[in-house]
Image (tube, rainbow, N blue to C red; front, side, top):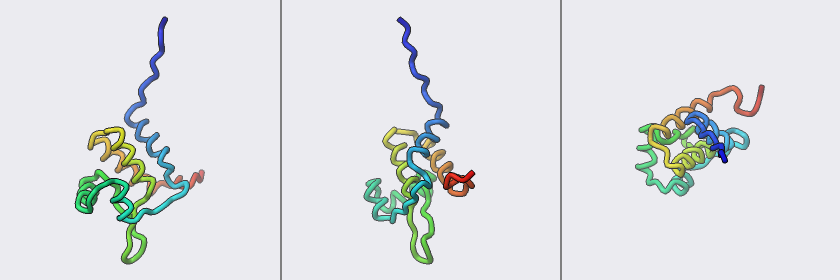
Length: 110
């Protein structure tokens, strides 16, 4: 008896699936820093070092003196961490997440 083993998704497909699963831009939510620290378990220093090193998406401006993090981006990075992706894979994910912020199809528009 021959069993067909399912094909493993490529790294690019895995990244796209993670981004898709994180529900990017369908119901955007902004998380403030204390919530991000709680979700990740990072200290402030670790969070900002990871941002500086491209391992976590940078915050967005909410006004003159306020910033926040896109919840779907945070979710996608956490999912990659759970999946034990390498730092290089996480950096690629973060680059794609940031690039998607500027895409024209954010809200399902054609």
